[in-house]
Figure 1 (cartoon, rainbow, N blue to C red):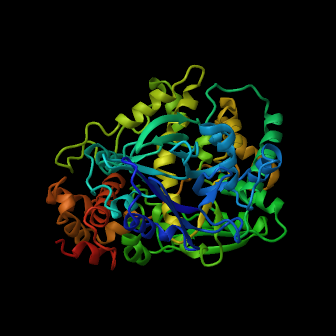
Figure 2 (figure 1 turned 90 degrees about the vertical axis):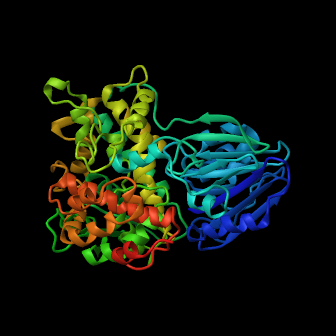
Figure 3 (figure 1 turned 60 degrees about the vertical axis):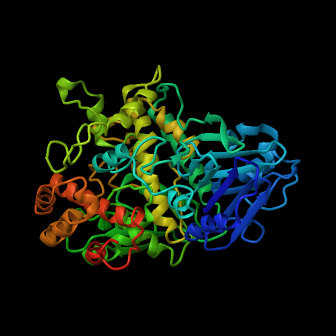
Amino acid sequence: MCGIAGIMMADGSQPDAALLDHLETALLHRGPDGTGRYVKDEVGLVHARLAIIDLTSGDQPLFGPRGSALVANGEIYNYIELRERELPDADLRTRSDCEPILHLYERHGLDAASHLRGMYAFALHDPDAKSLTLARDPFGIKQLYYVETPRCFAFASEPQALIAAGLVEAELVRRPVGELLQLQFTTGAETIFKGIRRLLPGETLRVTRGRITERRILPALPTDGPRAIGEAEALKRLDDILMESVNIHQRADVPYGLFLSSGIDSAAILTCMTRLANNPVQAYTACFPKTGVYDEYDEAHKMAKAMGAHHIKVEVTADDFWRDLPKIVACVDDPTADYAIVPTYILAREAAKDLKVILCGEGGDEIFAGYGRYRRQIRPWWLGGRQRRRTGPFSGRGILFEEPKDWRDGIVAAEAACALPGRSKLQIAQAADCVDWLANGLLVKLDRCLMAHGLEGRTPLLDPVVGDFGYCLPQELKLGRGRGKYLMRRWLEEHVPGSPAFARKKGFTVPVGDWIAGQGEKLGALVAADPAIQAIAPADKVKAAFSGRDRHTLEAAWRLLFFALWHRRHLRGVAPDGDVFECLAHPLG
């Protein structure tokens, strides 16, 4: 896991060294183990390295047999198989998992990414073709952003690097702001920053003379419908697939561990890790002492004890929230207002003291249909079925001057694009969640909160083999016994006797609402006085939201607080020094 950036000048001139310096400096937190740089003709590339595989000879840029150069962020898990089966005659000069990309490009051109099994965002300069190729993994586990200007094409692992380098101004786009407030993430290729776009999940771009000249998309999920398979056979295949995925996701030359919740997904990963391990797995669980929310720790500890894991309890308190929130919000430049950023950041800070890699359960709900809303979405309306994300916390509450009208356009477009012939209604809902909620919400949260501490996050359930199998299971193996993830539950029941495999899904809750309510009067006045909030909501309505007690009102208050802190950092450039109250009280010039 690393940080990458680069530029291609449109007029053929050499990129300015100072500009590359700015890009590199902005990404140093992603790569504490060293930096690399490449400049040739009109192209410049920079790399900040977090060393995970091939610690001695894996520095980047890496170079191909005919002079091509590569910078990459992520891990290619099938690099051993690629070396042995597809590239046995290639002149590979390092043990890096990313070097095979260069040789695949020599043989397959823009189709090189279709041979990769991993999480990645990479840039490859081919000086002979005078082209730059960018690619992102199909699930969008790793992010990549770009700008096109009359002068150049530039890209980076984080939008803030492009702004810091002066390649684009920090200016907001209206529609994504509405999405952020209502959805807690933004959709599609357009980011919240004017002029900055995302590579879509699975997208490959070719750039020539500073302009995009070709695009391709590698889909994350199969395009066909459910496949017939019996429960007994499905259980056996699931066991083989999970074990293999967890095994290759453990390929590393550094220590690794697990984020463990009380849920099915991380419990399944722990079970596989334990079966593969010679030593106890190191597992971390967040808990919220002295609050009224459901605390995952006790159930997670039972699972950890059953598996013989070394279990580490990480307490997250109101004091942590008020002290750390400005720094946490500062790290999510591509904003996701998921309150789980708080425990994720604090867990990462703790795990990074001992480890460099963490396995996580992201993707299980989307691939194996774990969300309760999936059951509601597939029902007819007269049986309680309802539209996905039909309302947000600001809907009909009169808090904003103008309630966003087009905040659902992105998810509606995603659903339409995912509605391929043969797919079931459930599959369409799952695929639409993968396109935006997963790629632009959950995975951005994971990337930014972990990389702020130089920690790599790996997601064994977001593997192409796992995805192909889980997504195409028949509906009864996803939603059996009135529970989501039926087959995963049956697998856990079979392999960990006594586990709460069929316990009702409680969901992960952070007591943000309670913490805000406890400081509502003081906090509401500070948020209401913030210029970014004054532009979208009247002060009395903002203060009333922070004085509320119902869940939806407090959710609206949280998103206003997030947006105020985020705007100060990423639009106004205010450093996240001090706690929440000090940051909000800091005068803006």
